Length: 320
Image (cartoon, rainbow, N blue to C red):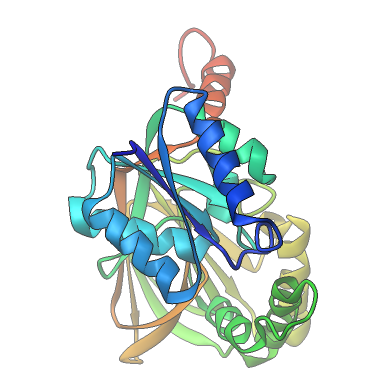
């Protein structure tokens, strides 16, 4: 039996125009030359998800998924459900989706051959997950504007156009600014309770970088809550431009706080959320929790990032 199963979304633009035999050969060679054996599965749609489910239930010690953030989120939930948070089974990710935020935070190269080489030479590292009302997520969970973006993507996605996925993201983002209403929420953390009126709220698994949606560190044991207030159209558009340009931490109407647990209450019994890009609806209150060290991953970027933190801290460690 192979020690690794590699499940690829055959519909992904990166590989759909390539010969399946060629893809299998590339994957098998990348792992075999480093002393591993790999079973390669190419599937799409329900068959792709079913292959992930089967691997999570009874697959080998390492499961590699080639897809986007939603596919990776599905795999993580299935692995956690089968083994529990903190299991020794390891997940690898190949960035074949539109955004690939999780893969970027892991330090994965965007090009398939380079990503395979990086995976095959990586050793497992433990990272945090987070959850909202018990549903596990790896990167982001958003309300208001972010849920509207996910709803718009589902409507605009594809259509047979070149670069259809990117067109869907752009169109849904623009429409979401006008559709997202004001959410009256109560935010409770260890630091206290406050009432907020926000058109967008985002919870990230660990802190985001200063310039975007990547995360410099994946094992802080924190959730960062970001919320945007302001009802005026001009304010929303400025916030959107700041998000795209990586200047959103400088926007006074976007506030952030890092916590280990947060409870969000609304007068609405249910709220729409975008969880790692997938739209879902949940009963309130929404309880966000950090799950430290819950997942073992193949991540070439983690070792380099950890080494950089040690160098920056100096021989006496980080400043208090």
